[in-house]
Image (tube, rainbow, N blue to C red):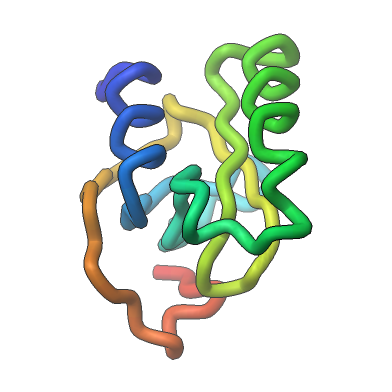
Length: 100
């Protein structure tokens, strides 16, 4: 399993493709997420540090990231990650809420 610190480091540098299993229904989902300030809309930047702090306090296994495909905050559990691809240059707009 990839370490939380390594995931955070990559998310702060750019967009990452995260394939994870949803806890609610067991389906796999592809998320294009980031914590890179330039990829987060201006009005959401104030929430960026707060989201990171709150998710770590609530559950250290929980991460909240900015979903660039859906323009909103999304959370997932580190232990449900199936595949993590850092530094994805571009994402396809047809991947919105992709479930595999």
